[in-house]
Image 1 (cartoon, rainbow, N blue to C red):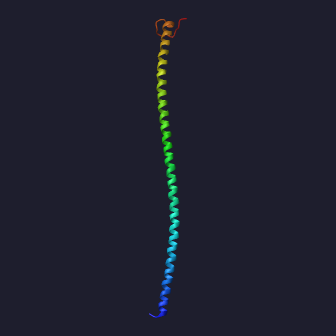
Image 2: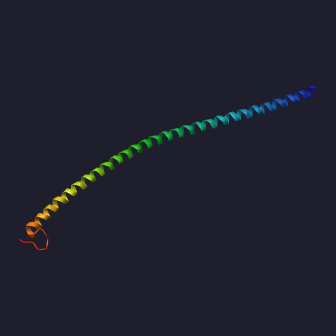
Image 3: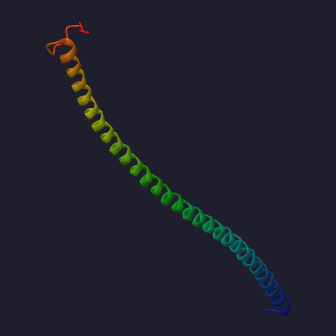
Length: 114
């Protein structure tokens, strides 16, 4: 191989090496950009999942409070129902007494004695 061919081969190799080096640099820059994007996406995803966790916890508290409220309403309703039964019994006694004293025989005949 003569000197001109050797220099030409060296030039071709240097040119290919320069292109390869340039390509590697571009790949590195592109990889860094993609890593930065991936890092931002990961942080955003983490922030969203933390926020969702807080919301789920808060919803759990609301549901528990609503459960307590419903239980209290049921208890209040049961108490009201018992009071209504007692009131009905007392009212029935008053009606019975009124019929007995005003109606004579304790049976209502539509006529009242005054």
